[in-house]
Length: 280
Ligand SMILES: CC(C)(COP(=O)(O)OP(=O)(O)OC[C@H]1O[C@@H](n2cnc3c(N)ncnc32)[C@H](O)[C@@H]1OP(=O)(O)O)[C@@H](O)C(=O)NCCC(=O)NCCS
Image (cartoon, rainbow, N blue to C red; front, side, top):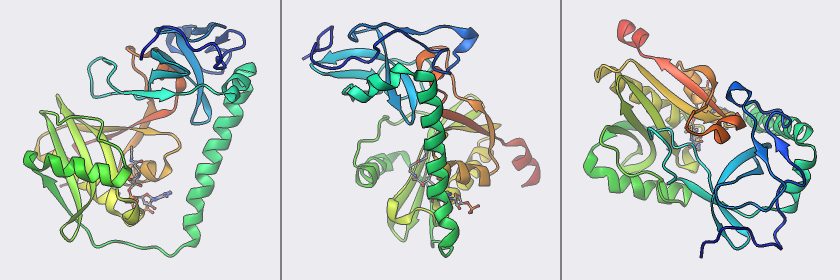
C-alpha cells in the first residue's frame, strides 16, 4: 500500500522551489521552507491549496497518486505524534498556485474571508430565531452517546478518544442530544477542543449556550482560562465565542509543527476566567 515516491503520472506540486516567505507566509524566526521541485516523497514538505491559502504539509505516506499528510493541528497533544492525518490527491491547480504563490495566497485568502462574510451577512435579512434547549454535563459513561452523535451530525468519527481530564457539555432538544462541546483540561487551563451543533439546530443560540455552560463548569473547577482554536473563516464559531467573552490572541502556532504554523489559518481565542469568578 505505502511507497516512498509519488506516482510519476500525478502532477507534483511545485514547478519550482517555493519559499514560505515568497508565499507571503512567515515562519518563526523567518525560517525558510523550501519546497523542492521534485515529486513529493515521505518526509518531504508539499505545498497545497487549503482554505484559500497555500498550505505546507509534511508527507507521511505515499499511496499511488494520493498523499497521506498531516491535516490537523492536534493541539491537545504535547507534541504531535501524527495520528491526525488526511489523504490528498494533488491536482493541476495546485501547480498553478505554486507559479505565483504570493499573489495566489493573498487573492484566495481575501476571497475566502469575503465569501464567509457574505454568507454570514445573509443572516441580517432573516428573522431572528432561538431554540428551546437545555444544557448538561455528560458523564464519562455517556461517551458512546457523544461518539454516536458526532457520527450522525457530521458523518465522521470523532477524531479523539476519551481524555482523562475532559468534560463534555451536551445540548438537548428534549431528550435528543443535538450538540456537544468537549473540554480538555491541562493544568489551570481548559481547551475547548470540539464544538458541534447538529445542522438543523444551528444559529439558534445552542452553541453559545454550551460555551457559556462550559465556562461555568471551568469556574467551579477553579480553572483560570479557556482557549480555543478557530479557523479564521469560521465566522459562526468566532461569533459564538466572542459573545461568550473570548478575545483574539493571535495566530495559532506550534514549535513542534512549523509547517502548519506557517499557514496562519487558525486563530487563538481565549477567555480569562478571573472576571467570571469575581463577577459571579
Ligand atoms: C460554530 C457552532 C458551534 C455555533 O453554534 P450555533 O448554535 O450555530 O451558534 P449560536 O446560534 O449560538 O450563535 C452564536 C453567535 O454566532 C452568530 N452566528 C450564528 N450563526 C452564524 C453564521 N452562520 N454566521 C455568522 N454568525 C453566526 C449568532 O448571531 C450569535 O451571535 P449573536 O447572538 O450576537 O447574534 C455551529 O455553527 C457548528 O456546529 N458549526 C460546525 C462545527 C464548528 O465549526 N465548530 C466550531 C469549531 S471551533
